Amino acid sequence: MYKEKGSKFIGFAFPVTSEDEVKIHIEELKKKHHSARHWCYAWQIGVEEIQYRANDDGEPNNSAGQPIYGQILSKEITNVLVVVVRYFGGTKLGVGGLISAYKTTAKLILDEANVIEKTIDVSFKLNFEYVDINKVMRIIKEHNIEILHQKMELNCEFIISIRKKYASVVQQSFEDLRCLTIKEVTE
Image 1: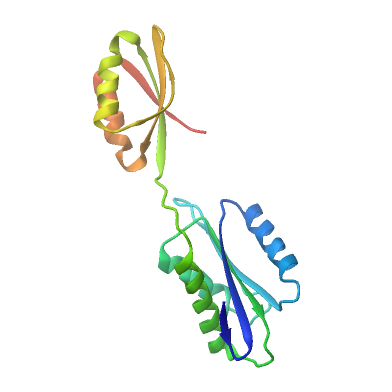
Image 2 (image 1 turned 90 degrees about the vertical axis):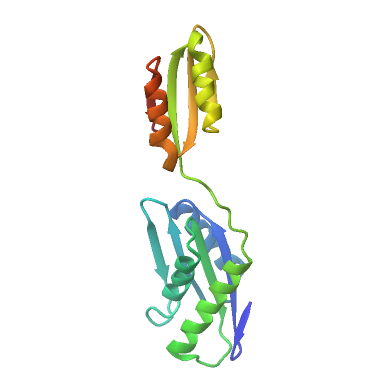
């Protein structure tokens, strides 16, 4: 919580992956803090295709949502919703004061938040004959590849997961074996 001239600013951060999740969190906060004056927020979703929105919720243009979004950008995080609930204290803060209060509250909540780092992974399906299992497993161990699914019979099938930045190298390693087929799995 941040206080400025009687107004209370309470920050919240939520992990989100869709606009629907954003709406649910905001509705819940509006119910929980029904006597507040403003529920200003910003969110960012995605990694390669970024979606974002900033909302001033009745405060002067760009005095709340943009400062909150600026903090999301400065922390270099995504898949996050930051909401700052304002209880009006009777004294107007002016645009500069509002920008400072919303920015500070967003910074405080993001500094305290437990940020979870995730990798961007690509999945591949490998099809090969059982006699080639040792060749396949050598590459899997060499590149520390995660096996998501495996079917081992005369004809084997593995679904593997690898960090995207290593995907082309790993794919080439398997293609060089020439004893299997490899195909990227799209969900």
